[in-house]
Length: 67
Image 1 (tube, rainbow, N blue to C red):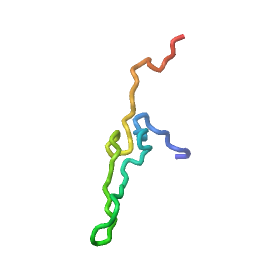
Image 2 (image 1 turned 30 degrees about the horizontal axis):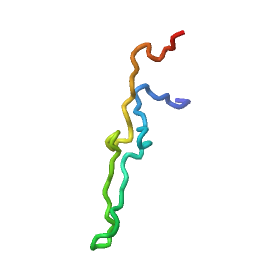
Image 3 (image 1 turned 60 degrees about the horizontal axis):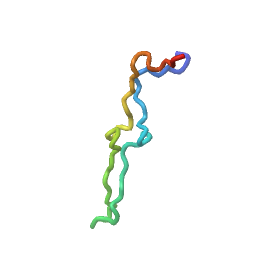
Image 4 (image 1 turned 90 degrees about the horizontal axis):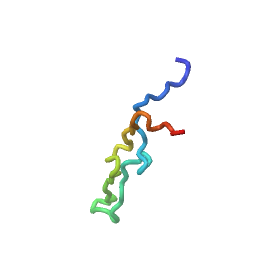
């Protein structure tokens, strides 16, 4: 192959709510008795921690502009 491979029409899109950063570690403040920082993991509620959304399909002719 001599050039870049074109993207297929069914590729997943980056989630607009989290910009692809679907999971984050949030500190709870303080440390446990072993000195480890206490954290919890929070996931994006829109994409459920995947970072992508499904491709939205428009009905046939929906993209055409009436003249």
